[in-house]
Image (cartoon, rainbow over all chains, first blue to last red):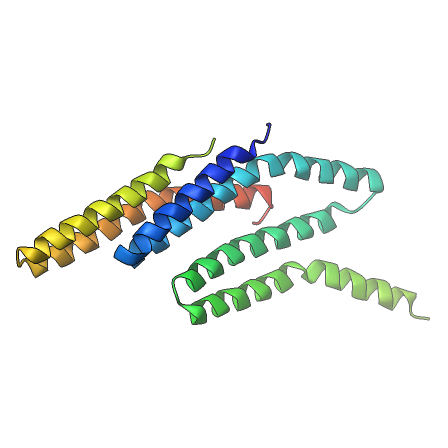
Length: 130
Length: 66
């Protein structure tokens, strides 16, 4: 899949112009429009990213890295992406409290996803202990 | 491919609802204006839900989130 940045720029600029128009008249629909623009842009970015992830998997297999670690890294990236999207939308809508909670929950979920790696580190340290 | 038309559609619904809101309010029909606002939000959310669920499905499959 070849990447052209022009489509992205067109979407972003159109969304910004329409948002500037809409935010004065209907702030509730401006939130929906900003969420739609964010989703479209992220979907646009995720297509080419698939190739990059295939490359990462090949590199990890070549380097002899456990598949578990790459999976954990990818999972943490995904959770961070989704939580960042949600918290930014909340913050744009003026709800800073909900945005902070979303970020907090995202951090907890990232820590939970990283539990296997932390356990493996602890096991390595314990096995090195004389 | 990027779907710009959804953004334009949401903005168009917003403008139409806003204009109709002004017209209804000038005609003294406050109830209908409120209902129209609600209907506009619901229609936009129905359009948005498909896009957001597609984004979540893509992220879930790509980042291997169970």
